[in-house]
Amino acid sequence: MRIPNHIGIIPDGNRRWAKGQQLGKEKGYEKGLLPGLEAFKECERLGVKEISIYGFTVDNTKRPTEQRLAFTKCCVEMVNMLKNENCEILVAGNRESDMFPIELSDLTTRKTFGTGGLKVNFLINYSWEWDLKANKSVTYYNTADISRIDLIIRWGGMRRLSGFLPVQSVYADFYVVDDFWPDFKREHIENAINWYQHQDVTLGGWKNIALSIDLVERAIIFYFLLYSPNFSSIVYSCKAVLLFAPEPIISFVVPKPLFLTALKAL
Image (cartoon, rainbow, N blue to C red):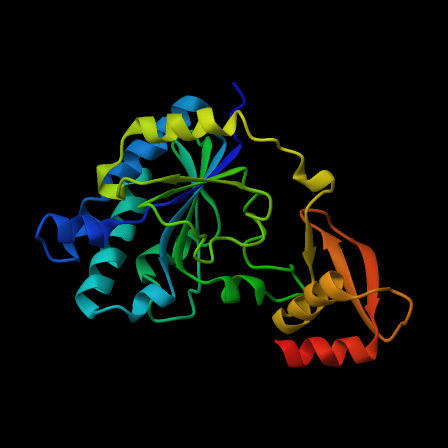
C-alpha cells in the first residue's frame, strides 16, 4: 500500500457537533481532544512520517471570547498530550500576536519527545498571510521546516482549504469526511488512504514552484501566466524558486502594459 509521507488534518465541525448535541459551541472543542490523539496513533501505526494539524487561525480569534479561550485551551492541551508520545513537535503561527498561547512559545522550533519519530506540526494562530510574509533574507516562507503535503483530510463536510499551508498543499490530494471531528473514527483515515491509492500522483510533471515575491506580485504573475499571449517584452522581472530547493531556477518577465492591466484586475 502506498502510504502518504505527510498528511494534513483539518479537524472541522466542532461547533456544529456541539449545536447538534444542544451544547454551547465552545463545548465542541473539548470533544476534539481524544480524536486528535487517536488520529496521531493511527498515522503512527500506518507509518506516516509527518502530520500537520490545523489548530486555529488568526480569523478564528475573532469569534466570541468564550469560544476563543476554549479552542486555545484545547490546542495547548492537545500539544501537551502528544509530549507524552514518541514524536517531534513544531508549532507554527504568528507568535508576535497576543492570541498566540505563551505556553507553546518554546515549540516554535521543532523539539523531540520520547524517542522521536512522527513529525507533528500544529498550526496555532496561523494565517497564510503570515506564512508568506517571511523574512526573505532567511527563507521564502515561515513554515519552511514543514514538508510538502501528500494528502489532506478535512472533517465536517466542507470542501475548502481555509488557508491551510498553501505552499505545502500545492499538489496535495484532498479527501473530505462528512462526519464532524468529535465523531472521529480511525476508519476515516483508513478510508482516506484507500482512496489515495487510486489518485494519480504526477506532481504536474514538475517539482513544486513557490514564488519568492510578495503577495501582490504573486497575483500579478499568476494573472500574467494565465492571460499573456507571449513572453517577448521584458520590463518587469521576478524570480521563481523550486520548493524545498536552495536556489532560484527560473526567471520570467512581464510586459509593462500587461503588468498595469493585471494590477487593475486585482
